View: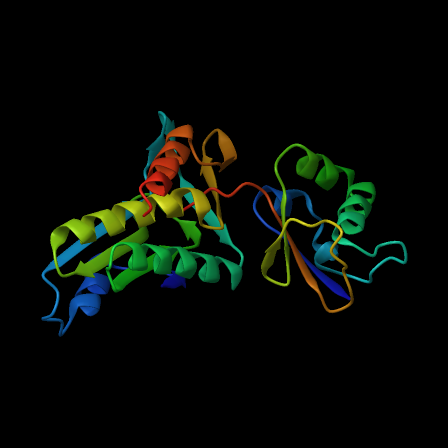
Length: 151
Length: 84
């Protein structure tokens, strides 16, 4: 996994992740982008804070748990921090797996985990000021659902 | 010296001078440290009281406010996380 202050190109990251791999039957990827508006309010920039060292360790722990659970040994996580503009990628999660079902589930569940458990703090700024964001009730509901599915 | 890290909204109200402090004589535990901070910095105290605050000692999650704090430690104060 990688935390980066720099803008990244998800397609290039995925190409590097899959280069030379002929043992996987499926690639599933998800990219989250910074939106230009939230609930009708314009967003000029998003700032994401992280706790260096701790954030990386926690995201790696979540990824390892998902990797084990879905027998999906190859997972890629790239996460932006710092100041992000609308249209830029925030997070990329990708899974290489033998069959597609495990890949889809691994990416979905890891994103559900990241939405509630990743030690990241987001501040949205727009013409009306800035506000810190906390997970929405539906994020927690998905997280609970993902937890229930553990075997 | 003890290194203090304030994340998210706590970083907005914590003065920059609080990044490293000499441990006051009456501060022995994480709980003491949190109370001392709230006394020294009422805005920070209010922000921490108004939400769920997690404490991280030397990069490890701790729920035990009676954990001792000593010179060389790093203590981080985390408001609820926004997630990725």
